[in-house]
Length: 86
Image (cartoon, rainbow, N blue to C red; front, side, top):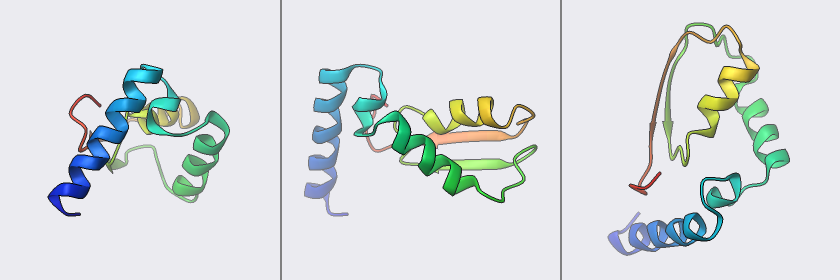
């Protein structure tokens, strides 16, 4: 990603965050699509003691989903994003 592309990405998500606040819409998703994406992403994973690095984590919704979906999730979650506000 070039510096220009990075800056455009940050501005795009900052606008969504300003418009929608701390909600799923701030990351350009809807609840149904995000839930399905997380189900497909983690299919077959042993989540109990997993260490997860979520690059492009947005608001960290994967962590919240793991806490509900894998109630025995005792692993480590680290989320990083190019948008500092996230």
